[in-house]
Image (cartoon, helix red, strand yellow):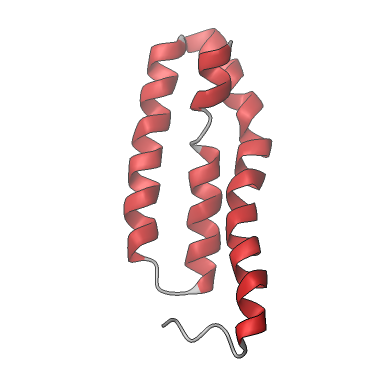
Length: 88
């Protein structure tokens, strides 16, 4: 237990905030990955995204408070730019 939730009703708020952070990172940085893929090529960008995802998932497992959970989910969203790159 992280001691974040005073009441069981607050769990949904924290869960929603943590999951929304990754989508915010994806929304803000998705177009950047596509631009990089157009200039550098798809393979290097996909490799960078995979490395960033691996690091963020590893660090997310070591997070110990809400700030780190939010920051690392945002970081995970930043590096989940493989989807638009593979579709272009």
